[in-house]
Image (cartoon, rainbow, N blue to C red; front, side):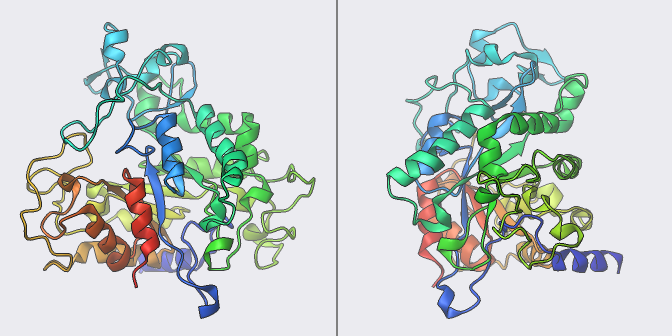
Length: 444
């Protein structure tokens, strides 16, 4: 009873952000076709270019991604950079440049930890293609690109939205042609423990956002956060900034900080000197000035997304915890949704979210209809719908090693199933071009 009551209250609540993370459905035939699922460039366009590079993010934008996704971690001097994990050795040449700088963390695991290096030191590093054990990906761009800073990523996105997009005629694209930033805060608890309490990735995000005029303009200025509930493509805009994390406490902490800080809540007015909250008339969408939903600035809180691995999404308490939070979305491993994966996220043959990928192909018997019912996945989608949450699954990759091979011969078939049969609202994709094509093809 308690769980069900909380769920019902959450499902009836209006989104905090006036740009809904879950695209509205057409209300009539006049609205046109449904809005395609969102495509999030997973760490950029990671199939084509090494992940977490400015070149990779730029390519994702060129291929039509609705978002680029940096994983943010802090350097020892408190600057946010985008890199795969807290261990720089996973994707950079740190062991060559600084061979003696490894250490054990508090849990006894050896690594070259980003929290031990200054920004200047990190700038000396170069990155490589992380997914190595598949012949489809090239290593020709290994050791070419630097580790980007959060500031540089904001600059890239601002330049794209303000200058490149209008110049190449994208102003009439879907979602207004304005892609956003889908930022993951990486390992906050680990960082707090292993940096002796001197670094907090959530606080550093707030500081960098507040100090960056272009970030404030893109992500919090009312004229850019304006969004219509129309339900047809050209008037729907994605929320300009989304924050995601695996750790519940970090998301709850950030929400309260965003709510309390006048820098982010629109009190300073928009670029025209007006003081409105995102829909151009000084009111919230339904014209109500009263209550939390109508207060100035509530609409400027970025949507929060809780990430979930297979252990979390199969935990009976997962949805109870979600019901206690103010979330706009959940980001499950696609193994949470498809029967072809085990409870550890792997299949026979080794498909996972890591850098490897097992051997084997489709076996020649893949069938998009399949014999499995994806009951756990459908239950997950039902729960998300009852909570009023968008579902953005991860991660789609072109290689068959990363596909549910029992049913799908290609990643394209698996994507069609996730979009059209499971009904997910978005996908984290390393092959952005494929995901965009499948999303726009629709389910008719």
